[in-house]
Structure formats: C-alpha cells, structure tokens
Length: 399
Ligand SMILES: *[C@@H]1O[C@H](CO)[C@@H](O)[C@H](O)[C@H]1NC(C)=O
Ligand SMILES: *[C@@H]1O[C@H](CO)[C@@H](O)[C@H](O)[C@H]1NC(C)=O
Image 1 (tube, rainbow, N blue to C red):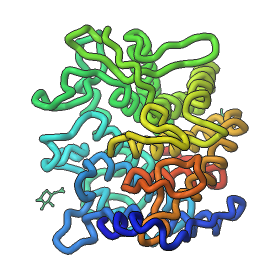
Image 2: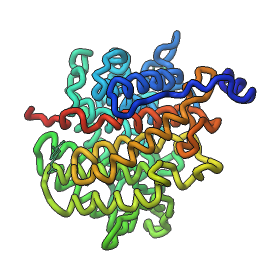
Image 3: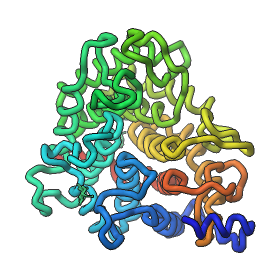
C-alpha cells in the first residue's frame, strides 16, 4: 500500500469520504460495497497465483475468517450477490482435510481463537442459508462443519486451571501455556448458536459449563450491575496471574452467546448476563456513543494497536448487532451506539489514494492516517449493522 502512504504524506489530496444516509438501505449498502472493495484490496485470492482464502501479510489467517464473515453479512443484509462466488470459494478452500477448519497450511500457527473466528463465519453461513458447501464437493452442510469445529475445539478442553481451552493449539507456539477468554468465548458463542440452530439442549448445557468455568477461574467477574471480562492467565500459575486487559471482542463473544441462549431458552439469567456485559461494554468502549478500543487507542489522541487489535471492533460490532436482534430489549441501548459509531466510521473513511480508506479513530470525523484490513473491516461491520434489524431472524435447522 505504498501509494496510500505517499499520498497521506502529501497530506490528503482528495477527501471523498463515504456519504451515508443512515435511514436509507440503498445508501448504506452502496457505502458498504465501496468499503468492501477496500477489504478485498488485501485479498490474495483474486491475484495471479495468489492463495484462495488468504489475505496478504501481515494479516494472519484468522483475519481472513473475520473478513469473510463481514462479506457474508453484506451478502445477507444488503442482498448483494456480487461477491458470492468469491466468498463461497474462499469459505470452502480452508475447510481442511478433517473438515474442521484446521487446514494443513495453518498447522504451524493456528490457535483456538483463529479456528473460533472462522466458526463465526461458518455458523453464520448456516443461519443465513448461504450456498451449500455440497455444491462445491464438500460432504457436509455449513452447520455440520460448524459442529466439526465445535468437536475439534472442545476435544482440546483440558484439566489445567480446572478446565478451559488454551490460547494455542500447538505446544511449540507462544501462548500454549495461556488460557484466555477469546478462545473460550469463541467456543461459548458456537455452543450457544448450535443449541438454537439444532434445538439441542446438549449444547445449552455445554455453553453453560463454559460460562461457569470462565466465572470459576475469575476471567469473568460479576457484580449486581455489571460483568467484567479479563483477557486470560497462565496455566503454570494455575490461572491466578490474570491479565486485566479488556478488549471489545471478548465482550462481543460472551454477549452474543448469552443473547443466543436467552433467545433460545427464554431464561432471565441469560438476559441479565447479556445486559450486565452490555452495561460494562457501554461504559468503557464508547465516548459520546462512538466506539473505540480503549486498551490501545485514545479518542482524538494516539493509537498503538497492533494488527490484530485493529480488527477487534469489527467482531464486536457484528456481535452488538446480533445482540440487539436476539434480545430486543437491548436495542434501545445498542441502536444509538451503532448509529453514532457508524457515522464516525464513515467520516473516517476519507483517506488514502482512493479517498475511501478507513482510519482507526471514529471520534474525530476525519481520516486519522491509519489504514489496514482491521480498520477497513471494522468500518464495514459497524456501518452494515445499521441494517441488522431489517432482515428476518437467523434461521434454525427446522425452517
Ligand atoms: C497451502 O499453501 C500452498 C502453497 O502456498 C497453496 O498452493 C495452497 O493453495 C494452500 N492451501 C490452502 C488451503 O490455502
Ligand atoms: C428471538 O429473536 C427473534 C429475532 O431474531 C425475536 O423476534 C424474538 O423476539 C427473540 N426472542 C426473545 C425471547 O426475545
């Protein structure tokens, strides 16, 4: 992206920005479509000799899973089939020899959270009736693939710290000795969604078990008004050396899982948990209702978020949208947050040589000079979630 750097150093030749009328579906979808081209600028699959399903360095494989989840929502909410083939090929390309999204190429680096982020996209494909993988020669449907992911992840649950998934899958990788909320939150959301999708209480039971462990180990702490989610801890410290970082996407994952369970079971406990997570998230991740990644970004100030961290708002935005639909009483809180953040995000998408490159800081009403796959996906997600209530509910296997 040399050209973008060059132009930014000449200090903004043209500020096109994305002009979105938040009350018009056509306007939102046309903006999202433009911004998604910016996501695909980083995609290798459309380049000569490039790997289908992969994004260019330095973007890890898990960010591809996140990007395809974004494109899938665009396909669904905007009823936009222009990337359907690209998306289909990408999703089935990474399925792996065991049909559980552990492709051979990733076995050196893949973590539980990476597989879990792909599961988000695969489960959405099931709920949204995306083109069947069987038409591409895969012997399973999307929901069955999601179950394969679930089984492969849950088989890694071990007894250190009384349960839970480690961050990493492979012993040689940094983080194999660390248990964290993102890996377990991914498994929790998947169990909750499978419970609803298959109307199967086995998954409700397991989701509850995952929640309980997260609470027992104090990765999640509850008061009368709110629930706080911490990042994780090391197995050699019996998970007592808790890293106190609070990231948007961890809240998103536990919140969306709780909302699915509330929606499926109707139980007040899950609604209370959803509300308490939302309450804490609203307090710490928004300023004037505009979202920011508080651990590494200061509104109107400096950011020091790494490549991964720059994409967390994307998953969080997607979760917020889903929560507002699954637990409708939350929408009066969530909708204004999505609206204000989407406006800020759209205003930030006025950078680069194309004039529609998105920045990291949504509070400044202009491009702040940052760009990348994470910035681009986060803007797409928050903007398209303006439409989340306008489409039918996620489906289950029975309809
Ligand atoms: C794995 O990597 C090889 C070499 O880069 C590539 O040809 C192949 O398509 C990759 N497989 C997947 C599933 O991405
Ligand atoms: C479950 O979600 C659907 C929309 O997805 C919503 O119409 C319904 O009211 C929700 N159920 C509950 C118990 O809130």
